[in-house]
Length: 150
Image 1: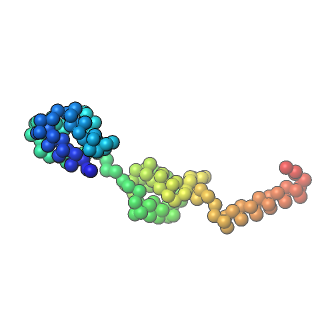
Image 2 (image 1 turned 120 degrees about the horizontal axis):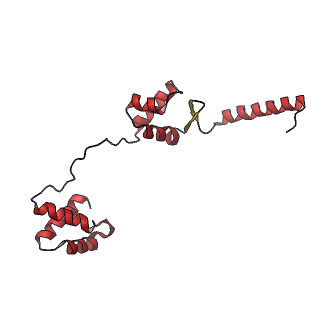
Image 3 (image 1 turned 30 degrees about the vertical axis):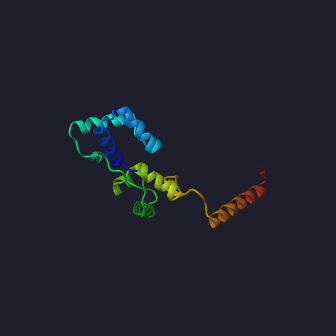
């Protein structure tokens, strides 16, 4: 049940002669946890009394909410591939997306982290792991040759 229908019920119950406490009780029996609180019911009754017939939410001003959609993810991925040293602030200005959303896309969706001023994968893939292990073995062999024992 959406908000508009609940507001219609509040209006109908009010015109039927019920007070706000009775309306809350009736709505809680009908809708359970989705029932509005007493203060909300009182607010809608006062709007009805003032002659406000619009039951929809009014438009709110403010910063629009950006979603983590595929197009945003692709834009961020493309920008980071072009310049791995780009900062969150520059990405935010370039793509007109909040820095926090860009950070979430980079870390949660793309699995990247900032390391030595570059965006790099958080987890190494198998070939990268093999190269890393081989490099460590080479370093250990070099240390054994010069007499360093760890």
